[in-house]
Image (cartoon, rainbow over all chains, first blue to last red; front, side):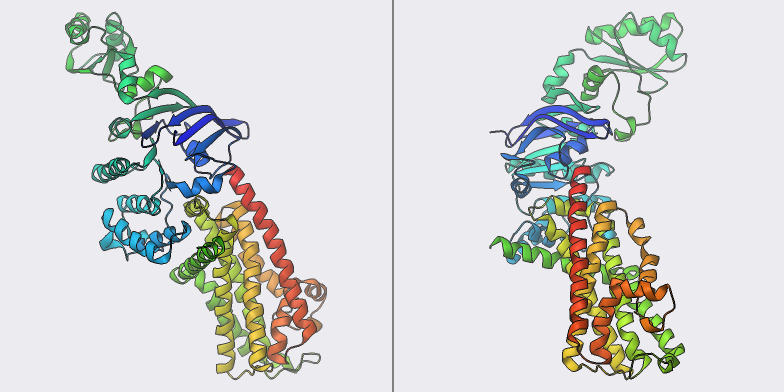
Length: 321
Length: 261
């Protein structure tokens, strides 16, 4: 039986339909990556699945319970770490975990034991008596994750758990998510990071403008595209002229910056000499080139016609869609 | 554990958090204790001769008369601060942690109100201690002091309910904070700091119908004269009325919050 089943789920805010009738199913023990840009409807979906927001249409069950009719049973089965770590800066780390244990109905002694164990697990034992307001962003996310785990939930919802974190903190969270999943916890993870979805998720759902535009394993989604593309960084010359020259080689993909041309290579590496010759003929020099295999970003482009917001890519520069 | 015990533990834990939060945030404790104490000192120091006015109730000292007003001001500000703290929780997303836990929604509000009630209790004890230290007598004795303490504690909880309802409805600390001056207006337009009989119109009529006057008289009577059944009953009924209004508004605001997220 799937851990999460969503049928035609909708959420309207006035005239705006933020989530437009999505369907998905997450199997028990799976990591489901819900990928999409800002404003795509990821957080609204998570808020409905975690009973924080009433749907305006459709239905959903989590851990076998309806999110509206069985909201309390859903809450007892899930752990939630939302996008903005829901922490009180005036509490200490230990106080927060113990409060969470009480909220989950654990006896006091058990709550104390689990708080100690979880603080150790997320490497916050030494900071347990410090106020949360003094924690770094990475420490706060780890504490939030620990709090979500205090009652050993069947299903864990993580809403953009690594947004804004440095690479080391991000990797720590990834390792923890993998370890949890190895222990049998179903994880529903929203992210704007392609790499995160690629690395962690068994299944990926790509959402854009409130609709799921693609769903499958990361490999199957990439395989649907089939062709790699050539990424040509120009040393000089007009990008418009370069694109015109490359048009005969294959489909042009939206550029990532003002110096790079992306062209689909149906024949793989065999298309590279053709591309260089085509640019040479119009007097455009190439500084570097790379044959790039399809990524989830390409899947996103193929399905939506535009890229994920660029600042969401780790270390990326803003680009036009 | 039975569900009742679990819910009681949740209310206790949230109440304790609320109290800790107040004492760890000086900007919350200052209005509740420091301002009313300063106002009490200034008023009793500068307007003590008021007790000689014809029509002023029979009191041992102006300080004795003023204690109830100081407690009232303190508990009103405690209720407002509780609302601000709840609105800050909403802004920070902390209430999402509570709403996504398998606890009844009323426990979340009740936990906050338990904290506000604890602050009311603290305020009552604080001002009674100040009164006793500076020579004010509690005419109703220990029983009178207990009645005053219980009324202040309950009233703090009742006023806190209104603060919580506004916080839940608006979700913005700035809005609840904006009511701060209103607290002073409501308290000053009651018999908290001056006998109703000596006020001039329209303040006199407003004070006569101001619910705060009924509560303050219920707290004052055991201090300046002794327990008086009717006055106490009016205070209790007024508090129950405020509780009822607070409960209805909070419950509607909670439902609204779930609808809008």
